[in-house]
Image 1 (cartoon, rainbow, N blue to C red):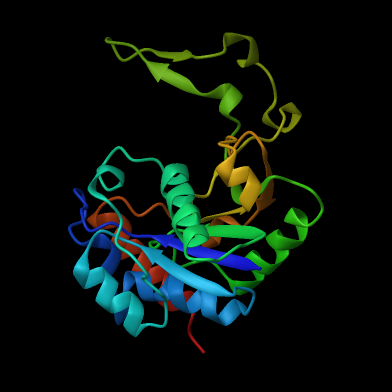
Image 2 (tube, one colour):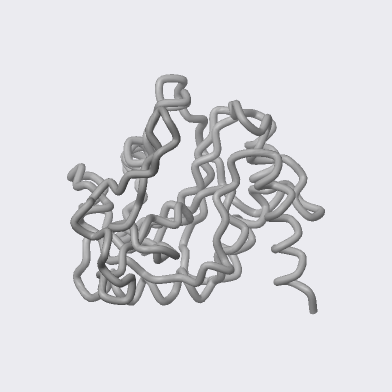
Length: 227
């Protein structure tokens, strides 16, 4: 059995009410719920929230909210893994048991159902976790810093004269979703260093942290979803 968990707390400092703010005609979280439903690979889709309004919207959109998240797991500094673990344990007490659990972020409107299906195949091959990654557009080995006088200095001087095409590719977490075996989530394994990276294209990724990001994401999303 497969479980989808969408963690969506009520507080958001940089973009107030970010998880339910209108995004191209729908509350942002609606896109993640619809994605999970459309994929047809989940036995249950659960939203973990501390917020009554988010709970109401989530249920209306077709997700389940069997319990509210406690305050100690709802502040700005709470990582994802403890929230997922909490939901799994609570559902276990209600008699539910799942083989695999996918944490889908509520503010990730560029995920496609195929991403979830394709990554699940890798999980079935024996990996503890699977999550999407993006290749850095420029080799990070040639990253520079600026000193107090404005002079640029390479962080790794040994690569100053190395051609970019001769450097290894590097990636970063796309911050969209994380598949994991239930036992892996419960064993407190680190999902990044114990996971398979599924490469996704740059044009389906944007980190929405401020109003400019939000506006750009809406434009991109509208263009990509035109019939």
